[in-house]
Amino acid sequence: MTRRVAVIGGGVAGLATAALLAHRGDEVTVFEARDEVGGRAGSWQHEGFRFDTGPSWFLMPEVFEHYFRLLGTSMAEQLDLVRLDPAYRMYTEGDPDGLDVHSGTDAAASLFESVEPGSGRRLRAYLDSARDAYDLAVSRFLYDPYENLRGLTHRDLLRRLPRLAGLLTRPLHTHIRRRFRDPRLQRLLGYPAVFLGGSPFEVPSLYHLMSHLDLGDRVLYPQGGFTVLIERIAALARERGVVIRTGAEVVAIETEGAVATGVRVRDAAGTASVHEADVVVGAGDLHHTETALLPEALQTYPERWWRRRTPSPGALLILLGVRGELPELAHHTLLFADDWRGNFGAIFSDSPRVPDPASVYVCRPSATDSTVAPEGHENLFVLVPMPADARIGRGGVDGAGDPAVERAADRMIAQIAAWSGAHDLAERIVVRRTIAPGDFAADLRTWRGNALGLSHTLAQSALFRPKNASRKVSGLYYAGADVLPGIGLPMCLISAELVAKRLSGDVSAARLPEPAPAPATERG
Image: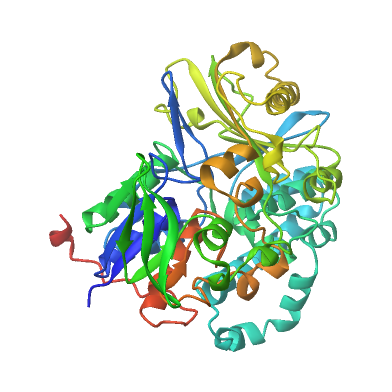
């Protein structure tokens, strides 16, 4: 029986869910309030430059491969991936000599040994543990909807229980500090906590598994940028009959009793209409979906629930088109402030503030991709983690953002120039745009203007994270970074699969089986 499905939000989770459900026979419509799809994984073009405005690290390729195979295609058919070497570069405050980090256990161990004698051997053991934790996460945690605790009693988990107990209760920074003394190495291993929307002083050390991805495995880049990934998933959805409506804001989830019956939609002209559906999937910000689109009596996660939760950091994004070359910066460059603990304290404390100096991430995709900048120019995407507070303000083009936002951007540009040695960076900028927490809140409706979703604290991970189905409304499901399994593009693809599993009655911890590949002659 064909179900009518309404998906709220055209980000990667919404598009991925729509494509997967349509591939399995459902009639799907996606409603996106903005004029373009992509959500956090957006794109901006200006004067010959094209900027990704969200995700920029391509990790966990096997998750992408599995998702594409579920749709009868492959990652190789959809994306042109390039391996980055070095994977990234690292600068620290007061040290003009950057460290190039190459993926692969041997290369990473060699780097660690050159910085701290004896640490190469310890890193090999660390990465062995990270790989084991990662494999366990993929096989037992990430694809589990946690409708029951059966998956947590699997023998693979039970025999690791003593070790897992320590990894779950010990902060990541403590885990790292016990093994490595050099602050540069500690920061290199701790920074992936930011990808999880948290602090290395708060997220559990189980997440040392992240180091398997960038050090033990490899870092990739899709030619054309991450907008190509969005375009390909949207195309796959449309090929399967999905209707994608942009400029269509869902203003309410329609219910009859406690059953979802559709969505109320307002178009760009302000006209409202009801789209009937058997299933509704909220794939935007969970706080907005729950507290703005449902009456309080039907909210699984009401406002009082959110008052006890921790958002990911907010972010100041700085998009820069730069004249001339910037060899001082790799495709990915990390700049770490000396006051490592204070930097995260400024973001997550009870009295949050914008760090200064800050630990900053810079992406230079023009190092790899000639399509993102005019000839003779560079494309920079700068991310500065900061408190999730929409009151910080909004950004703008060519310095037109709120004064506090633009002053912070000026400081960050000067910091990058001084720490990397690209001293004339500011004078060579020809395109500039800032995006701040106020923009995340206004444009993407993210809770408190956060940039990534709910932080991966212990109390907001695995079985403690919001589930992919409403407890109050039958037929209402969720996908995206706020719900299981969590933050990041791979997690959003898995969240789409969790919705498909729930709709088929599958509550196991296993991935959906991939269809057998067609013979080569049939694939052409």
